Length: 133
Figure (cartoon, rainbow, N blue to C red):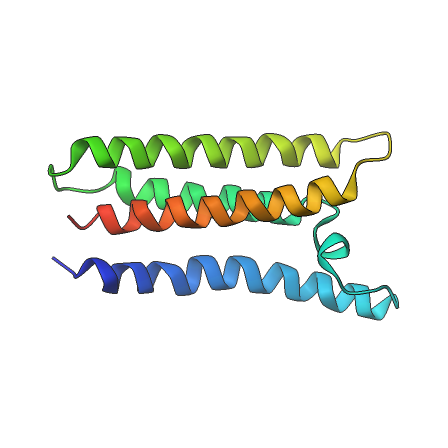
């Protein structure tokens, strides 16, 4: 059995770093190319952080659901439930944002999606840690 911290680092680097850095890096490049300001609102106005949160949550749920250990069942169920709710909320809100036919509150989307992303990363990290205990 791997150490939980080792597993967390091995999950964090490809899942979180690449899932966050790559799309936001491309969006940053596009903003700079089109001479737009580079800020949180511009980076997340189309719900980019929401879909990133949903993907990260789904990845962590898969890690914990495939766990072979039977200890800490209550904590594992709580962590999976929290991550499912956060990932589902992120995916649903992303659908609302991209299908909007009227002006959306960019600040609401920007800061709300950042909050959801942070919460999802934390609950996902909990899932990954619990998958090894």
